[in-house]
Length: 222
Image (cartoon, rainbow, N blue to C red; front, side, top):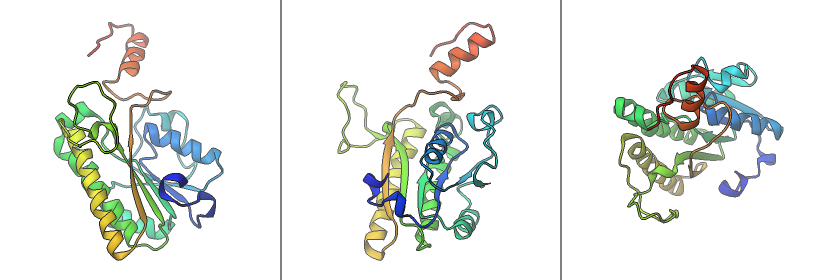
């Protein structure tokens, strides 16, 4: 993170906030930061019953609250009380098929949720850096087989990837606001798929295989 946002984590005055810390990636990130002996706080929705967070008994291991990131008042109050120095924003609706079922929720959480976090961070001088995690699905895919580079054009086909393209636009707009008025450094990073222990999300290859095997039923592959 220090290479990306230009801040040395060892020099931060307050804790690092991880949004979405009860999710699969958020749980692993929290464990990593703890291993680096860094102070962490978490903001997320309630954990799912069979999640990695729950299986590892992570509740109350760090200072945390369960708040919807679309709640401007709630997020702002949380930041004012805990005064983080840096934010790693991972909270999102992360599933493509779920985005087809609930496109409105997907856009509200991923786009306006990100705006809420950035607006709240902008109001506090304690926040020095915000890292917004989007996805490699933001690139326009022409099925050429070529590897994407950061300067490739962005275009979302499904509601999930489209919401993340819009999130990138929100980040760009806030970067411009900061340039004109000052504020925390804001950077977006595009994460790819992650394979690892504790991922029990629906419609993912390895979790689906494990579920089918443990339930002694035929594996349905998409």
